[in-house]
Image (cartoon, rainbow, N blue to C red; front, side, top):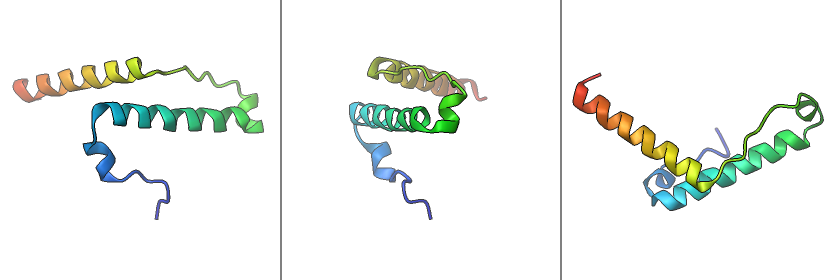
Length: 73
């Protein structure tokens, strides 16, 4: 069983809570990648994300989902 699997209730919370949760999870993953000796030596580019970029992503995805629903794709 996955120990760190998010509960479904996180997906039904407010957009700001979800955005900050995603930002925190991404920061934790990025820190682990940077701290790992093998992964750190690979120089994997990890872009900084912020609340605005996450919100913009959600907005674009919602627009595309609404478009697909009306077009029937």
